Amino acid sequence: MPYVYQNAESLEGTSKVGSKHCVALLQHYAHLPQTSSWKQGETVFGNAKIKKGTAIATFNSAGKYGSLPTGNHAAFFISQDAGGIWIMDQWLSDTQKPKVSVRYVRPKLQLKNGNFSDPSNNAAAYSVIE
Image 1 (cartoon, helix red, strand yellow):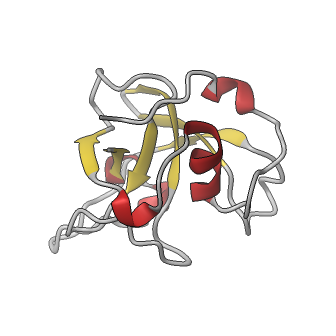
Image 2 (tube, helix red, strand yellow):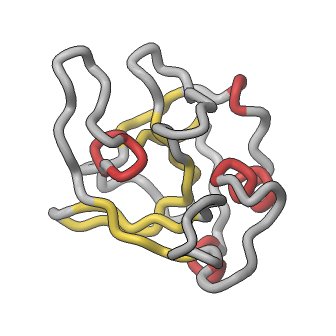
């Protein structure tokens, strides 16, 4: 069952929470468990059934959230169109994002080994967190 925070869109411009890492935002507002408990759900990009405020993340080819310093990300889904997805997120080390904010993410290639190119910035790499 997906985790949803109904007021995700209202987080625009608010202060970062917790450790200021992306995961802390979801845990704070949607009460997600530790990342080791996360399961990969449906693919987000191109899926019209995903509801606004759904917690989404990038998962590795084994279906696990990597919890690495770079190369994985978690956010709230806001909306999508044919060119990409809008997500609400926070990023500890991004000086261009001093607050929680929405951003547009376009799809990029999936590599032959099943991993995604630049997954944190690749709409095709995001799945629903269950």
